[in-house]
Length: 459
Image (cartoon, rainbow, N blue to C red; front, side, top):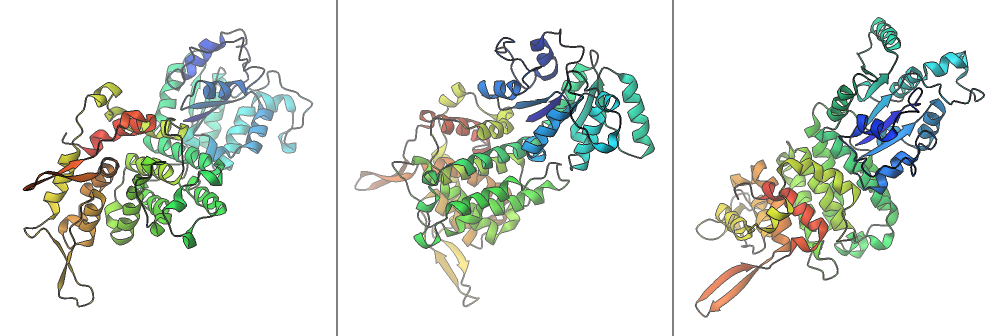
């Protein structure tokens, strides 16, 4: 989560800055490595986000000390995309340059800066930032009471507010309440799209899957990620499932043209493209499967999509992945537990076969041309093709939402661990599965241990 903290440190310059940061933000950022000699946020507010970056935190805190810092930040950032929650001190007249111009209609400069937090609050709401994502934190409770009275007079919803040196724990609880699954999903998507837009054309692998005449140009990729970056609104929608369905349709759109998906020695995870290819096929021909998606599944698809489209570093976990994997944290395996697991790859493979093959080892589908005769779909060998054949069939299983979401999770494992036929003797054949060392590549390990229980809920 990205937090904007607006604080002028008036009356608090003598405080231990490390203690103050912990008092407000210890639940989100670890300040054990903070050194007041290396970082001086009262004089250099850029040091705070720099510190978050240096320790590779999945959260970031931006600081403004007064109205002019806020103006500069607003001009340089799209606040609605960059910031998830805002804490505003009301009085912002400490160390401010009174010679600098303020909005003409505001009148007296001294009074303006002593209540600049109110101006910033109103400006943010005017810009479209939801008031429920803003809180006021001040040592002057009288000003809060006056603001609350004026707020009630114009029928504006109550704004969260806390008193300094008294209600810091309540502030931390409020910050925690902003870190919803939806907010984390949205933040991860935005950061992932920003990363993708900075990558060189040479890092784009997607064109390996599609015919030359359909290849994407760099401008196409930029446009694609600009759309995705702006897709999820800042305020969580009441019916977010409808938004998620549209998002997945947009996310998977480019995979319509994918034809060639195979193991590549230079990009072993290229086969994850089957997840996106099947998603595109299924949402196009049976979109009801995606009527009730949750935040975690959308996060999973987004991470897989970027990894399949680009040549990323296999041994690096990127910031957007750190944010999105936090959605799975409560159900993930530890690295030790994962390393001790015997993966139920063959069980998942055989379960799908047992689900869908009749006594003749065929799935039958009505012949669309005649409208009466059935045609047999050839038996598939690979997991992703078997799953897709269910969608091509008239089987009632093709409408099982829970099953198909699980199949897409399982495709992560069963495209990397492909089946092969082991001829034990002239009379016996056995299907076995190639071994893939998920622990060998850090991002694979992290993704695998976080989605394990969603892939194999019975294991």
